[in-house]
Image (cartoon, rainbow, N blue to C red; front, side, top):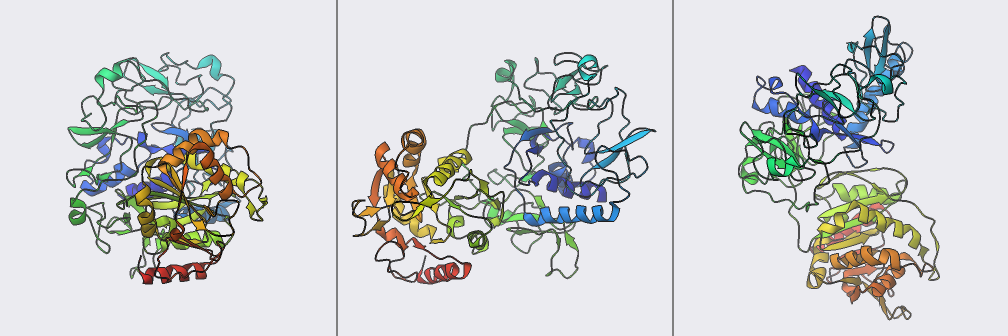
Length: 625
C-alpha cells in the first residue's frame, strides 16, 4: 500500500511537470492499469491508483511534443530540491547517465534508475522494458533488473533524437511485419508490442483492446517485446472499420472498446459501462447524472486525429453542492469539492481537503506536522461563466513589478483583475514563469516571440511589432474562440470584470471594438480612440482580425499598438463604439477620476506597484462592484 501511494505521488508529479526547456510530455490519457492492481485496495484507493499510475517510459504511453502541461511551482520545487539533496549526497559515488552503474547501483541524475543488462554491464536510464535495446551497440538482450533505488525527481522523457545502433536496420522488423521473434523495430518511434500468441507488431503506442489504426478490430495484449527505437511520433490514420464498429462520443463503448470520433478514447466508469471522451479524470464527473466515481481505465487505443474544439465552459450538476466536500472536510471518498475553483488534494491515505492550491510538504497550520503529497483527486470544480463571456489577457515582463501584480490578482478574492474573467492568460517573452493558482487551476505564462519597442510618433511606446506577435500567440492559444469578448489588459490597469460585462452586453454579437477615451486632445483620431490599457474587442471583431487583419494591416507602424490596431479594425470592417465610462486613465486627458468614484468605471490605469494597484482595487470594491 505504501508502494502504491508513492507511485501515486510520483506519477502525479511526473504527469504535470513542465519546465521551460522541456519539449516532451507524457500523454497519460493512454495509460492502462490492469484490474489485478485494484481488486483488493478498496474503492477510493483503487481510483487513486488508476488515475495516477503512469506506465512510465515508452510502453503503454504516448510521447508528444508539448509545452502546455502545467503544475504548481511548489510541487516542482519540492521534487527538484529532493533531487538536488540526493545529488549532493551521492555525487561522488553515483553514476552519470549511460555510464556503468553495476558497482554504484545509483544514478546522479534526477529520475534515473540503474538497470542491468547482464552481469557485466548496467547503466542509468529512465526506463527499461527488457529485451533488445535499439541504442545499444550490441544486439543482445537486457534483463532490465533494477539495481538500487531510482534517484528522486521526475522521470525524464526519453531523448527521441538518440541515434539507433547500426544493427537495427538489419535485424529489426519493419512496420507491418511480425516482430515477435526479432523483438525490435527498425522504424523510428516504434516499439514491438504483443497482439496475441501468434502476432506482435511495431506500433507507436499500445493500450490493451482494439487499435483504431489496425487492419482489424481484434484485441491487443500490448505486452512490450523489447524497447522502443528512438524517434518522433507521427500518428496514424483510422482504419475503415472504425466508423461502423466503434462507438460515438458520449455513448457506451464498453463492448466495442473504441471510438469513431477523432481524438477520442473509450474510458470505463464501472464494469459494463464506458464512454468515448477526449480525456478522463478518475473520480466523479461533475456533469454526470450522479456522483458515482469513474474508474477512467482506458479501454482500447485512442482514435487518431484532432478532436473538435469544445467550449471550456463546464456544466456542473446540482448534486455537486450537496454531495461533494466543502473546505475543511475530508474529500478522500468524494474526490470532489462543492465550492467553485476548489480542487481535492491528498495529504496522505487518510486525509485530503479542498483548496485552490496545495504546497507539497508540511503545512505550518497542521498540528501533526506531517507532509502533504498534494496529489490531485478528481476534477477541479469550475466557476460558472458570466454574461457576456470574457477572455482576458495581460503581457508582462517576468522580472518586474508586473509579475508581482499578476500573482496578487491570481490569489486575491478567488481571482481578481483578469482572473475575474471566464478565461485568461498571461503572456511573457522571457521564458516560462509561475503566476500562481488561479480559479481554473495552476497558471503559467504563455510564450510569445519578443520584438523591439521604440518610440511612436505620438511619443508613446512603439510596441506594434511586439503586440502583433502577441496577437498571433492569442490566436494559437485559442481561448478567444470560446468567449463573446477578448480583453487585452495592461498589467498596471485595475479591472472589475462584472462592471465591464455590463458595458459590453448591449454590443454583443456585433463586430465592434470599444473606444474608451474621448478627449479634446485626440484631434487626429476624431476625438476618441481605444487606449491600450484596456482593449475590448467582440468575438466577431476578433474573427475578422484573424481572417483579414493579420495579412492586410501591414502599415501604420509609426504608431503605438492601440492606435495601429484601431486603424486596422476600421480597415477590415470592425466598427468603433465609444464608451469613455469604461476606463479611468491618467493618460486620457483630463485624466481626473477616483477608484472610489460613484461612476464605477470598469477599469483604472495606471498603478505600477502592488500596493497602489491593490489600494485602487479595495476602493472600488468598497464602492460596490
